[in-house]
Image (cartoon, rainbow, N blue to C red):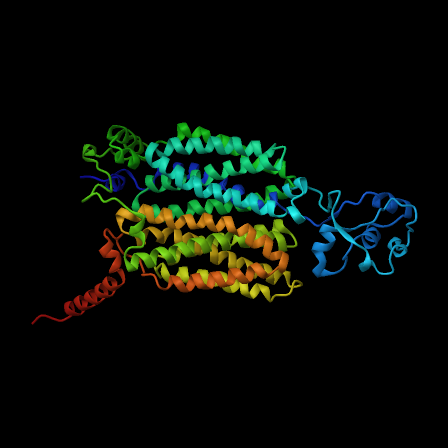
Length: 554
């Protein structure tokens, strides 16, 4: 009986139809970028200081320059380690009192400024920026800075819940229906976030975007891999993720042109409404239809694909069967992921690597937004290195294998973080170059773990294994904002120390996994348990056969 892969061999694995579908779905991946890493621009925190009534009037009366005003009125000015003091505290002084002079006005109150009492900002903040962000509008600084962490963590909570819940619905009700529903909800909630009057409403709409946006991205990934033939599936998946990188480059330019967060949010959301036209452009997945015993609809779509590709329709479509319809049906269990030694090892290492990839990828982007001189250029440059990362994967995984490029990419990210700590700030170009190497490394690791995860589980728990392990990616994203923003308050480079340790450990653990290059997907638990031993024995058998064939016959 024919499978869908057999049919695609005859009607075209990657021809005109698949290329059009890839283009449409790549646009979906392209617009996911602002939701995943938009916090860099939406949550930009500019230099700030306490708003003190009376200071402006005193400055005008005395004819102070802006530098003199700051020098006379801010605590901790000039001390690099007292940034929090001058941004979050103010002198307990009534600046409207007439006894204050123009030359060092605080001298009349105390011989030493350090003797003056300090209080938290009482009347809001003044922000040194021509634009706006959610930080400046809702005062997410000082005692309220945790609310910025919570904003990004809420998105990742949405990613986690939505990926699992909507992933199940996509298997139950179809890819196309769920894709269109996620597009609609994502579009509406994105616009509503742009006009949200309060932090609570903004957080609510961002959470809703998180619930549907990543799920929609994953459905797009599933659709494109189900429409193309097996020999193109891996390459198409990598380029689908590369379209996300194109979105990073465009986001940097749009954010530079629109420094006000509401306009930025509105502009990056608006294109999503056009994806509702996919109702007429993208058919349902024939693989899903076959798995649901809807063969008539599947055959209709297959005939359309064949016609679009200029290929004849196969004569034996009535013999279609689902790809997984082989052998005994087994019920997967969470215990199957830890019951046997090798699968347990795979599960723990993969979970840790998904967690690491998310923490380092998002963390490096967030840290760059805090430490960079020009966040737009730094963001753009670091995004560029994701293209060579994608091509490096394509060139190595089928030649060198999965394990060594994966381990090296994790270690490269860790080493880059470690080296960056010791580069002085005046060598900004070198610091950016090293950061880009780290970004390239973790991008490779992120994409390789997506590819390898499915290759290390037997068929009946493969989907469960991918779902459980990849969920650690979103859990990592929940913790990352708190990790980055809170540790930088202790020391700006402290997050990089954590990233270095985490990345180097991930690279070492990858070396404990078996190589899967050129191997068929395992069907049973026994095959997985014997993967490394079977590989060695197979190599020896092939070697002996070749040597034997070289002996001349007399």
